[in-house]
Amino acid sequence: MNIVVVRPGDLGESEISRWRELQVADKSLDNPFLSVEFALAMGRLRDYVRVAVIQDGGKIVGFFPHERHNFGIGKPLGGFLTTCHGLISVPDLKLNVRELLRVCRLSVFDFDHLVAGQPTFAPYQSDVRPAPIMDLSVGFDAYIEQVKTNSPKNLKTVRYKERKMGREQGEVRFEWASADPATLRTLTNWKSNQYQRTGRVDRFAQPWIVELIEEMHAANSESFAGILTMVYAGDTPVAGHFGLRTATTLVGWFPAYDPEFARYSPGIVHHLLMAERAAAAGLQQVDMGKGGREYKSWLKSGDLFVAEGRVSRPSPAAAVHWMGRTPVNKARTIVTDSPNLYKLADRVLKGFGRMRSPAQNQSDTPSVKEPWGVG
Figure 1: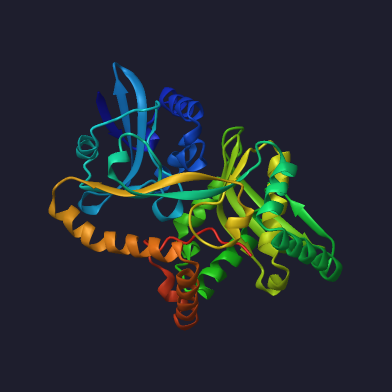
Figure 2: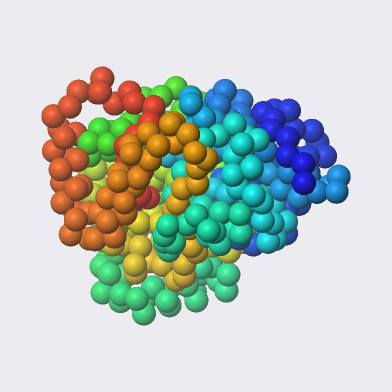
């Protein structure tokens, strides 16, 4: 086994093709955050991004995209921005993980959305969590029947609010895969305001994240694209979402809505319209990500699984990292698993958001990962 660590931009065409080949061959890797296009974009924008290229017998058998920060602290590619990470490799590849960290010059690697069950990391999983999905593999009609079974009352209420919005605000229409930069700015402005209003770190106060989103919005191939969607009442945008897709999976990323229309639950209305259009476009699932709000329990029709854990090599940096991160991660899991605690934490954050100034939203490393919330 031979491992070479490079920057994403140093990957050649044959290596990029091999990455895509490995990803397509394993259904568990069907996530755009595991795509080579995302790694290449991150590599152009952040100096700390690396890829370990793993060869066996002269043939590439895997890639390990990651971030290498000061003191050898390793983080998943995209860190707090993403909802899936791991090895892109042949099935059942099992590496000596501490040797992998040594070659990558990492003291520790902390993960919270790793593809569950990968043999290299499985011994270091501390927990495995469900990531709800909207399963569209047999069509939207079958999916919506499952939603009815989950909660007929909720579905009826959302459909009523959709009709009410149409009567009072103008005909409801849905736009799929908008290429308009102005529409993207509308969405990111809503999201930025939401971050500040709810006491969370404003992602879009960081220029590199804005640049990443703009680059992803422009991406458009059969196997990878940015998908911008928007619901309108008449000519007025009311709710939207920007996410990434592979050929078969759309992953939630940045949903937002105009608070002036909150009484119509525009985020949930958008979510159902997006699922319908995704199915029509041939996508097989919408990945909603782990944790978060109660709406996922009745919108979902299946689950994927992601793992939390930590692997380290003996070092002072790893010990300090454990003391700073592990208790926080455990506390976050407890909060997101409990609807009552989640609501309480949400209220506290919103109160904090009302008090703090925009200048305090400039941190590059948020202390909590925000779940994909809509409505």
